[in-house]
Image (cartoon, rainbow over all chains, first blue to last red; front, side):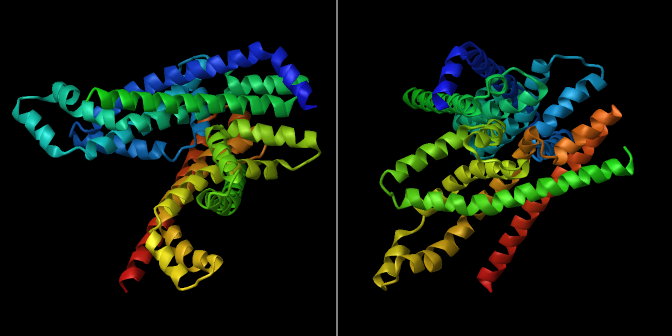
Length: 219
Length: 214
């Protein structure tokens, strides 16, 4: 039984590979978009405009109580009802982006709060304000300290991307499920998908270690 | 949305809570068991558990639930959807809990352990009276955090047809052609359930702190 499963998977390797590449593509695009959006939300969070800050903290806390699958459906069905018609893939990436941006903004804020105030005060004294203060004084140490947590968030995006199977995005779990349904080899196809996810996550962890080592050397 | 729809979502919420509580009740001690295997460094088992935990931590719940639900019958194990859902979520949370317990065990002060040994306490008693009460206290915040994560991945069991909160909301949305209102009701339920866990943890900690100074 199991050798047949492996044989079928080998025959269907193109479908599996295309699912894997879709998952990688979704993860990279969503991670970049979520990173940028998270950065924007973070800079608004520390803008010291009370109304914006209170609203955003409230929204982030709310987002952290929402299961990703529910949020994914909300975007998928919600966008058309406000007149925005997008494909499944775009809806999925949008959901991943907004959901993870909330977490990224929060982890950046955590890094910011751990920052010694003196550096920022010195920046003020040297005439840094607004955008330049953020880009030159605040962000470099905050981003550096956030690297490991970015890695964790990226792993979270990889795992969350499997939920997109429910809106028929043809990623890795979708591919495994198709093969399973057609050839009835559930064990081989899902274990193969799990091993590929494992590989992706180990890849992210190795990447994070490499970036940290590079940052250490260039210090 | 009629009153029947609210009732349907409430029934889904009961399933969400049941799945989550069962998973917590099974996954927390199993995680401790795995952590003890790694902590005591049992040969072979130690490496096996380390690899299993790493694999499970990288596996999306959706993929795992499909594996458990479709693959178990091929080896002659027919289990109901609900049980398959609980088994899946338990496997996932067991791996995370193992890491939480292990970190706590590694940080446990060795001198207390040595003192208990010097008094001739047998290993099981040493664990139950000296180690366990202290690691539970240290691990609690991380464990509760993991519990809220279980609730957030619990909709994964809807993929194999367990009608929980999210799936109930989707069904109503599909039947009424107005998907947003049932989603908002579901959202409110999650906020309340997750909020209850966070509040319970804060209360426990306050009570414990009060007890410590009494």
